[in-house]
Length: 470
Image (cartoon, rainbow, N blue to C red; front, side, top):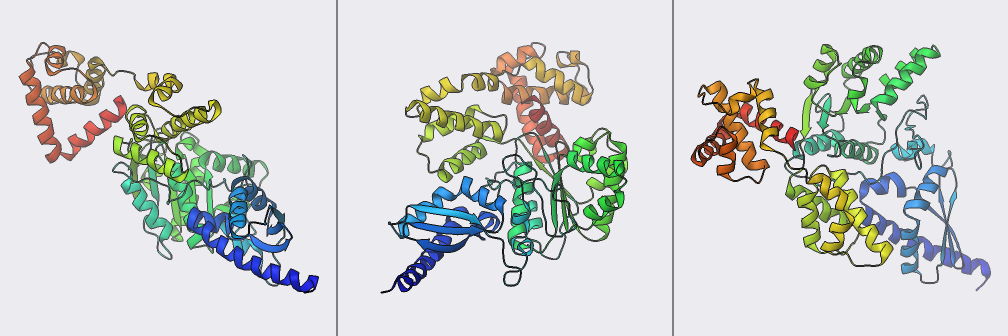
């Protein structure tokens, strides 16, 4: 067999191996990640123990090298144990055969941020590469854990991401506290659109960057180009819209951009830290526009959702850890998902660095400061003060003998919250409310439970007070 024939045979076998590896990569990482980052890896050649692979851009090459190269190398070695090296090079797509890589890659090719640099979506040549914010490959629908607190927001985000020609809600407005999953859903929509509708022009950025670009356009007398860039997209995603509250000129431009896109039946997706009606410093007409479509609240997580998030994280990372440690973390780290995942990462990093197994004792030691912060005890006095402010009654009414409904109902709500948010006994709670008997507290708990089933306004008030106090 000649060297040329042997090389041809070797390459034919390697091409078959690469087909198998592509299937494994898609299966392991999911369609969204595969289509965004791995789909455009091409087999180039095999030379002895070295396989050469190519990608169409330097950014994609760097991203694959830093995030997926080791796994790809393992897959190659599993197919052919003689392989020891997998090399990744940049090779732009042939415009005659493959077309422009902008068309082939859609959203993923446009994401040109690596290690904190800005990223761009380049589905149209008119877009400024510095506009698009980077999409995190970790934030997909596949690894978003759904629970009661976020099911509406998740379902709405899915519907928008999967819509082909229709615009289900305009705008879709997602809001909630820090670290509850708003940005995760925004990125997941971006990835899904890249996979399902690569022909769409999608632009994702923060409200801060929108303002920066607008100011820059004013400074350089380039407002027409600015308007064209933002009003020619099919999907506009703006994160942290509360940033432009109080910025009158930016709000004015955003208002007109919003209207232009809605008139063209183009999708708008917005996130904020509070509902449109609660955005202080935002013009009334802007608040009204933001509430036009679907407003979806992401509530603080409950125990079951926190545990599910931790279980999902260890399954994805193939990490072995005792279930009781995950249960402990889910019980004790209640502030937000970001802090919860950070706590797990700290525990695992400590175990790896010092070479010890993760135990409940080591977890408590490593997270001592975090656990102490989450252990801040809510007092009955704090509850009474917050409830009195909410229902516009005097603090002294919490201890008085007045039985008017305007006073008695808030007092019962405060008792209900004291029972659910503190470890105080019923007699102790009663004493804090003007020396009342524990049977009075029991009656209040029963009454509020009944009213929560009938009066949705009261139920929402109580949920809001719980979130504020927690």
